[in-house]
Amino acid sequence: DLLRSVSHDIRTPLTSIIGSTSAVLDNPDLSQEDRRSLLEDVKQEAQWLIHIVENLLSITRIGAGEDARVTKTPEAAEEVIEGAVGKFRRQYPQIDVRVELPEEFFLVPMDPLLIQQVMTNLLENAAVHGVTTTRVVVSLEKRGKWARFTVCDNGRGIPEGRLHNLFDGTQSAQKGDSTRSMGIGLSVCKTVVAAHCGKIKGENIKGGGARFTVDLPLEEDEHEDQG
Image (cartoon, rainbow, N blue to C red; front, side, top):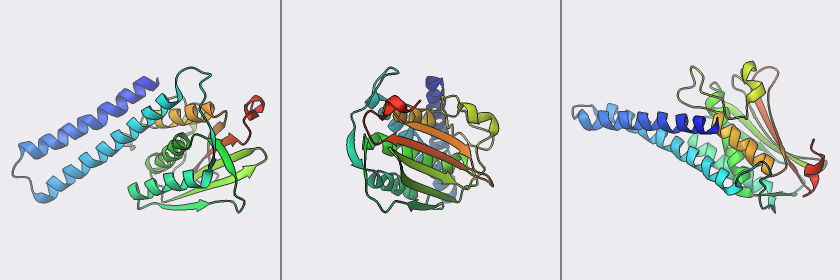
């Protein structure tokens, strides 16, 4: 299912890139405005391909097998969040992002590059599949022996029929979602979080929008109790 999703996500933007560049090369009489529009499309599709490759690289960092684990070191979760949010703001300047951090500073055992990829995917998901999203809130809190990362948006929410298989790599793009599939991004999130012995959940917010939560253990042996 993941390979099918990846194949779709790679083929579609490549087709668009070929179509746009061919239009520019084969139509010398195109106006400057039309050329710019086509090149903007190429840039957007290329950025999406980079996003896919980053996800694939994240998977290779973990390895294969259900028992795959990552090398974790105590990291400042705030810096990981800020890294993902900074990248998101550059790509989606029209969306207002608010970051809520606890007063208490604490370290979270993690692979920072992988968890930043998780946060990037969840933010990307809020922007693309929220469709009407204008605001995203990213928060961090300590809940007992767990660190909870939360991404909330005010978009259209998650279709009820998709809630049961959000993270299995089978989510294809909906009508109105352009060419974007949430399959690989959320599947990578689940893979990374599981390798950290953590938990991930997606749900709708009463009144509109969606919320994703990622819980990471603050102690190395916490996975034995996660159920």
